[in-house]
Length: 365
Image 1 (spheres, helix red, strand yellow):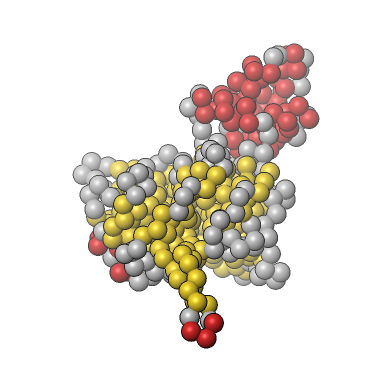
Image 2: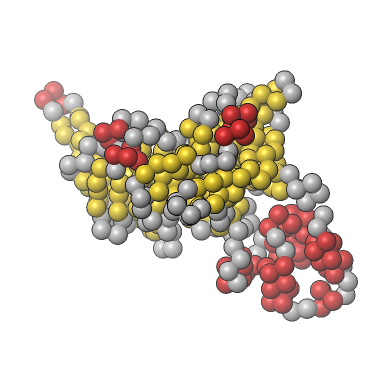
């Protein structure tokens, strides 16, 4: 345990903290206690447990400009096919990372879309339409998509549901009904919790088999397995365009964006795409590590881990069983534009090999 945390815990059981006004206690915790210490602090007393779950604490952290990224995962059991919600927790004693199940969150299905917006995660699939508050680890239902769609969901401040929408039903000869589908965008406003009017795009030949999607510089990038169907959507101008050929040239999947640069794991290297320079590069300094650790991994998923950092999750055989690793990589842009990476930690975060990785994402708290 850190010296700072030991001092704070000693202070918390003294007569001083209980006698302080709530707003001062909130300021002390927000400014002095890192997120990874919150689980320990919540066990000190009922008042601290209530404080850790209070929106006031996270609002004050934001006002003080000390927000941190917290990483979550959705894993599916190979035995039961049930999905669970996990948090990446850094242990205080040895500073190693572990995936810890969040038992207060129940997911009915692993299929679907998970969209982080601020401190919440929005879930859309065939059975769930809900928001998960990552400050209190509680969930509530939200209005479902008004019209049936085959879709992909991405978001930043608003949530954009992009895909095929049933426009109308045509009755053919013989009484058969035929559905007419068009490419459409539906927008969910996270502030008003309402759906905006649907935008239909007549001339967009958009596929349905997307491999990934990201948001960079306010634009939505949708990568299709078929290169001809990948595109970019600009929400402010409601403008569609085909994806840049350079970005579309790589089969990126499990990607993340850090400081407006896209990263993804490609076999034995970590690739980076800078939209300002419209070029791909290989992150330097990670060659030996990636070859040794991820060479036989079926799939890796990169997640924004905060300022100039990403977390890379991957399956690997370890001590005779399949486990999930998490490597935290610090990123540095050097003179000349080269990007270098340094592995800060690499931990087994899930030792039970009977889980499949479904989705990873980070929220700001």
